[in-house]
Every structure is written in structure tokens, then in C-alpha cells.
Length: 313
Image (tube, rainbow, N blue to C red; front, top):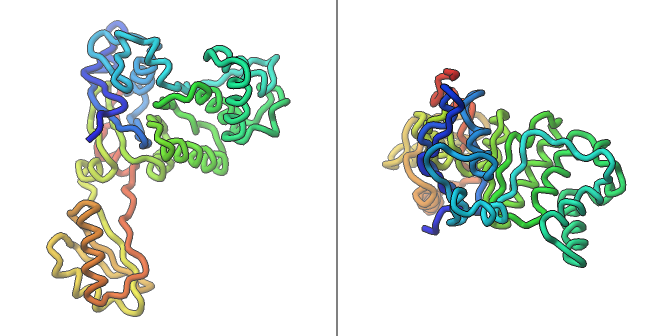
């Protein structure tokens, strides 16, 4: 396996008697979206600020692309894009002027700066708003501008603190598509949100914390297994499910078969993605006429309720 893009080891941060982050360790790879969830006051924002070099841990360390946030914060800042949960654009600048200002702050000059501003504005669908005052955008367009500013220096890791907060359903869907595109392009995305349904549809993995401590970290399937939520596979067949039920009933990794309406059945499955592909190949070879074969997405709300107690500091 390649080295993780983000690695945190025993991060701790206290504010007086309040232990906001307590020996927190986890890591995430590049090219994936990982959620960061926990109750209010769990230490998410403090952790993100440490990773973004905006705060110092009392103990522990973290590395972004192999670079320590303590030993070389300047190099870390070139590798990350931090999007805080508050966006307050300058009122006397247009969208274009706002992006151009931050492009200059990133050290971009000449044609490179102009092209980067155009490209980022285009990716975030801000081109037609380039002459609009930055403080007169809708909530959704404001979040796009916030993200665009974060992307100007082409960071390897995006740290996004509640980026979908306050967005309407359409804006959330469009924002989620932008995040997925960035991950598919190779960037790592570490995103906190209270909208767990959104994370379920976006994230490859999740880090769960409570009272500053790690509860569990891993892929959605790994965390679901930790929480006791079984991976289920849903199968749709041509005609009746009788032959399919007989076949899956004798497969060693298939349990708890259930028959549904519309020629569908489901079962709990203990294997990984490779084992699932092999199972599908065997079923097809056995003459089972399958039109849909899919793993049901784990319910992050259920995982959250099972893994956290809701205790506050």
C-alpha cells in the first residue's frame, strides 16, 4: 500500500480543564473522501485547525504528504486547502477580484494566475458571476466561491469543515458532485458534516470521534462491521427468485436471506469486494439470471448512534 496522505499520531489539545482532543490517531489515503463525524463538542474543528497549521497540539504530531505540521508548517500549507465553517467575503470585491486577490497571495503571477483563476471559477461554475460582488452571492454560490479560493494553489488534501451547512438540497447535491470529482482527480478530501446522509453518499471512509477520542476509523464497510451493522447484498432477478434463493442459501458467506417484492432478494454477506465479484460470477455460471447485484450502502446515522453515546465535555 502507498503511504497515507494524512497521518495523525496521538494528537492532544487542551483548553484549560477542557481536553478537546485526546491522543487522537488516524490516517486517510489520497484520492478518497473521508468523513469526520462526532457529536457537538467532540473536537472536530480543533483537530482540523491543527491539521491546517492554524493551531498547535499540546502533544502528538500529524503529517500531510509526509511533511510534519509542526516541523514544516509552511510546506504543509502548500499541500492543503482549508475551508472553514465560516465564510465572510470582502464586500468591496467582485468574485473575480476576490479570487485574483487570493491567487496573488498564493504566489501566482502573470498568465499562470489569470489562467488559474479562470479554470477554478469554471470548475466551480462561477464564470457567469465573475463581476458580481462577492458578498451578494446566494449561500450555495458563496460556498462555491469559498471552495474555489481553497483550490487556487492546487492542494493535495482538502480539509473541509461543515461545507454543506445551510445549503438547500440542490446546492448540496451539486457541491457533493464537485467534491467527488476532486477525489476522482486524485485529491484527498477530509470533510466534517452533521448531514450524515450526505456523507453516506459521498465518503469512502469515516473517522468517528467523541470527547476528543477516536471511536473508530476505516472504510464505510469496516466501520459498519465495527458498529454491528451487517453488509447486505440486494439481488434482482428475471422472473421468480426461487432458483436464486436456493443458490445463495448454500453459499458459505451468505446468511439471513430475505425475499422482497419485484423479483428481489437480499442477504447478509461476510466477504469483501473481491469475494462479492466471485459470488456474482458463480451465480451467473449457475444460470441465475441477475439484472441487479449491489451492496447496500451502510447507514451512517445508524453507525453514528451505535458508536457514540452523545456525552458532551
